[in-house]
Amino acid sequence: MVLNITSLYTDYRVNTQPDGQNPADVRRPGFVNIPKEIDTALSRDIKEMKENLKCLPEEVDRFDRRSRNLDIAEKVLLAGGMINPTCRRLNSIPKDLQEDNWQRPALLTGVAALSLPGDLREVMFAGKDIGNIFKKGSSCKFGGFARNTIANRYQHPLSFMKGTLLQPLAEKYKWLNKIDKTLYDTKFGSFVKHKLGIQESRYLAKIIGGKEVTSIKFAGGYGKKLVGRALLRIPLIGLFLATALEIPAIIKSAGVEGSFTDKIKSVGKQTLKSLGFIGLIQGGMALAGAAAVMAFPPVGAIAALVGMGIGSAAGVLASKELNKFIDDAFA
Image (cartoon, rainbow, N blue to C red; front, side, top):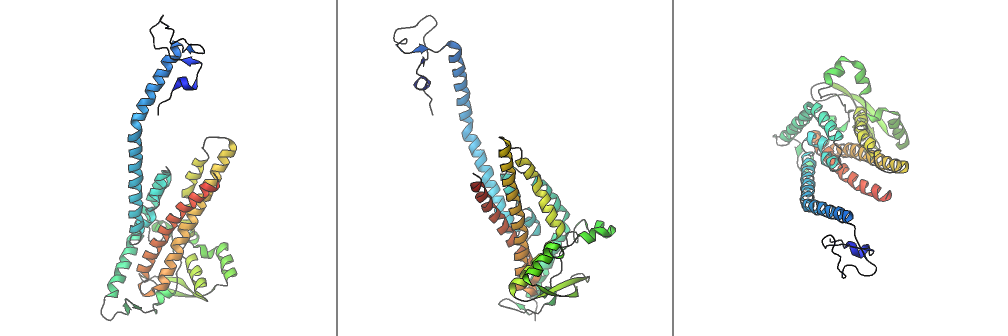
């Protein structure tokens, strides 16, 4: 783009003649020469602009490459989450980096490191399920799954600390076990159970490893069973941690330039985005994981792994669409 200064400022005309020479064709009626100091400043600014424009294509290419790389990484993590819980925990990092939210990926990586022993155990259990499918005499044949596996007809509460590097800490300080409960055992869970009329029966089930844990079987229609099991699959500590991971983004949103009203608007937008992200991710994993185990109880470990991966991926993609809707609504 070329800017014609004299077409915008018709009172001035650039004097390209040497000092002391002002030919008649330069000094026409209605025009005066631009003073030398202004002419020098304009020349300097135009030169700087040209230099900046030279760098622009390179900056655009670099931004485009970064965006493509993040898109590829997101697809790999979303797909990997179907078979690897660690990928599932990290699959929102590309989205965070695209939004220049560096704090959340750092914290997520730390949580994934703490959960690595339990994640590896989940993969190992899924591998055993796959092996059992092909054992001679197994009732878990493709196309004819037996639905009499007691361990998966009942849902035990998921724990945030068990199976992680935090488990020794929980064993040492018993009060940590008391707060390591699920959304099912909260006032919100009681409200949902009452409104939906969810009925339960409990018994001590022996889960993998020989340990006994109170498990719950739900009566009623499919929807009631699904919601009841999903509430048991959302550890309260994990929910609080997911909320805490959103705080840096909300704080950062308050630093937007503009008036106080602009700042309040920015914080409101980010708060809605964060709440939507938490709800979609946590709800997606819990519901999809519960639905998968209910559909294929003989291979519950595989079903839970794949179901939670699908739910997490769906939550990430849905949250991106929700963010666009929120941006448009606040535009």
